Amino acid sequence: MAEHPAYPVGLRLTGRRVVVLGGGQVAQRRLPALIAAGADVLLVSPEATPSVEAMADAGEITWLRRPYTEGDLSGAWYALIATSDPVANATASAEAEAHRVWCVRSDDADQATAWTPATGTSEGVTVAVLTTSARGRDPRHTAAIRDAVVAGLSDGTLVAPHHRTRTPGVALVGGGPGDPDLITVRGRRLLAEADVVIADRLGPRDLLAELPPHVEVIDAAKIPYGRYMAQEAINNALIEHAKQGRSVVRLKGGDPFVFGRGMEEVQALAEAGIPCTVVPGISSSISVPAAAGIPVTHRGVAHEFTVVSGHVAPDDERSLVDWPAMARLRGTLVVLMGVDKIGRIAETLIAHGKAPETPVALVQEGTTAAQRRVDATLATVAETVRAEAVKPPAVIVIGAVVDVTPTTDQP
Image 1 (cartoon, rainbow, N blue to C red):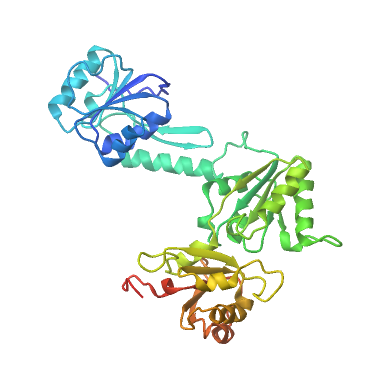
Image 2 (image 1 turned 135 degrees about the vertical axis):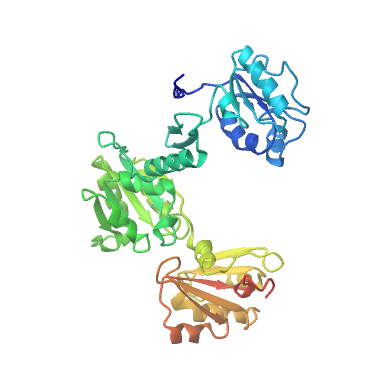
């Protein structure tokens, strides 16, 4: 007899009974999707992994802590059989067949009446990949196809020509610390859908080269602002393009709300009645130290880390940083935008009690091909910056974590 391919279908399980037999790794992988589908899940198993037990404790599933017995599939619409007992699996499979319950078996796909596809989602679209026969089933192959399709939908590289998603308004996108691979999936997708991109100098520039030729790319640093402050000119550019019905991405380095003036732009757009989506980004304050091998926290070394702006000196009346308090902290201090002020920052910290030998690391152009790390102490950092010609952008890390290495647990 010729083997027929499986018939793909989407099950609507909201409020419907689903029985899962076995609380091991298979259940741990499959349960979250069943819960998300709104199924009334009954787990029958004498034991469960800690993650599955947590789902039961949270009330997301009902757990009968015993082995399978005939009759457990009564009233079920769908069953997942994944116990370590072959006899129980076969008996439960026969019960499912007798009661016409669609049944997945983790131990024997040939005896199942349903197969679980490799699935993924992207912006309201679910991708499900099935092989055509039981004999040809290769979970790694189907998962790889699933991943490729979902990635294409997520980053915008796979879009049907006649159905390009396009939402007028502004998306404030955090581009991450510089490496184009460190932008979020959502941020990358919105870039692919944009009509206009207004980009900061510190954004992931390599991504701009991937944009289609019709996308207008505007360097925020070169927006003419005449009598306006630069930020006000950027706000006006965002509003102007959005009012023309265009999909605008404001691409910023790091995270929009970490010293990125993101809220100023959100407020200006709100005042103009322009819808705005904020997409968080990976902040350079934690990612750049990590890329240079520095943990901002480490057990027994630092139980806190504080991020401050160094764009104005400690003795500048515009500074909002409580530098004496910073000197008293025992954890890690991360300074952004402080290369040209690090001498006065170090002097202030020492004057208020920070040890002159406190380790300091400066990570220039973090996460990019040009990344370099320069180490010093509070006492020597000003001269080191001059001698090593450290230039912005650079993240400055101050504290004992600078000396933590993969081979030295405690500095």
